[in-house]
Length: 115
Length: 113
Image (cartoon, rainbow over the protein chains, first blue to last red):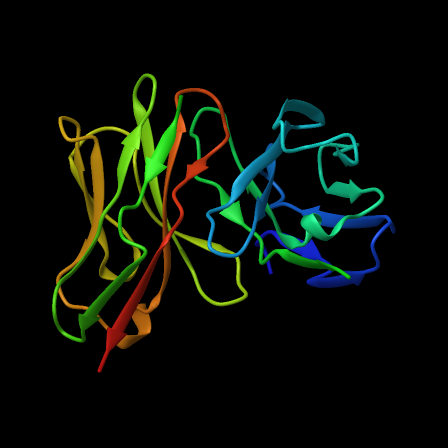
């Protein structure tokens, strides 16, 4: 499978616990994005990387959220001290930006439920 | 500021009839416009995009979209709807060089037999 891969697909956690999600982008893509989607809403931008550099962060990304892309390949999104309001679908996407830009390709998402 | 509006939460159409899902946008500079489709508990699948060129863009599964600069619209269309087209459709805009997409709230399309 050469698409964007996210792990885990589902995560249930207790309030106050830390969680970490992983995203493996399409191999030749240099841009990687994280979005959050809640019921009845479109995806909301969280952050994006070009290679290993985090170029933009949304105000939605509070101090409890951190994202990394250490080698410019896979990325992790960590949420510390989870709250019930963090329950959402977390979507990862990747694209190539260069001589010929591509559109963003999305993974299937990680559904987080905080109980 | 960039934004997208999808004025209809739901669109219902009979199989075989034409369908239109509406989208209007606001963006600084030239717009890069996209349509994505989402099936239950799945990620988003790319349908089509407008970057430049012809105002009528053709995409996957027989969908097309018409870019109208004066009306700042990018409506999704299909001449003959299928039951399998039933899904949640999102319009998105990307402003110039920044990578982030701004999404509308989505339109639930239901095609009944």
